[in-house]
Amino acid sequence: MEKIEGQFESRGKYGENIEMIIDLIRHAEKSDLEGGLTEKGKEEAKKYGEKIRTEFPESAGVKVYHSGVKRAEETGKLLKGESKFIERQREPLTLIGKLSKEQGEKLIALVNKQTCDETEAIQALIDTGDKKLDKETASSKELSRGIAEQILTLVKMTGKFKENSKVNVALISHSGVIEHFLVDILKKPRENFLKEIKGAVDFLEGAHITVQRQDKETVKILFQFRDYEFEINEQDLEKIINE
Image (cartoon, rainbow, N blue to C red; front, side):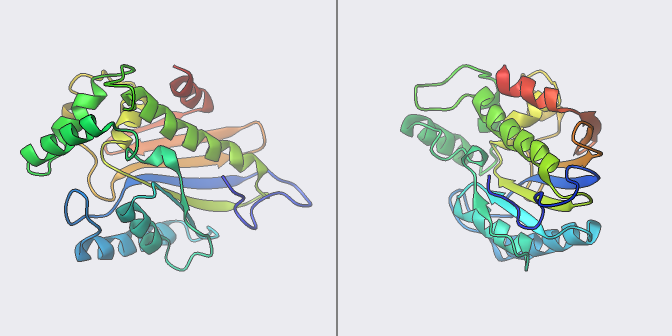
């Protein structure tokens, strides 16, 4: 992950009184299974970006990481607005390329069967846990680890920021990726997980993570998703990564 300009240490103190807001969200509304954003989706992505900047006006801007898929990249561009930061692609945020051709066809068939409701298909992969459906397809646990690694990297990065820095980060991902991390960080049984949390993540929905670093050794991480709100720590993320 490249440096966030103007935030990293130079002279003076660093890693003290740092606040980072991380939004791990699904892209905005898409036109179909493989299409780009709808006009409604584009407008909502702009509004979401305005909401972020209004809630955290001290931030130097919104730093965007996306999956590289067109609809996620487009969401990121609209969300960050006039931010000076360049949006970047991050492989752990996508399911594309982690499915074999056979499993990809099965996923599309399930989604089409459900009239573009991905819930059944997503739950089927969550149920596999660490078991791979085939050699080419990532397991649910592997997808979860990728997200956890991305977030842990950002948390550790705050220890290198200039004192009093405020940073906004948006991780733009997909339904069918975020849920695999949620089941682990919420410490829920995998069976019927989506039913328990009342469905897969919607467009522009996801986890809101507040990282408050007092100094190099002391950091508080607040995790919010729907009705869930609790503190996590770096060890929780490391446990997901190493399981």
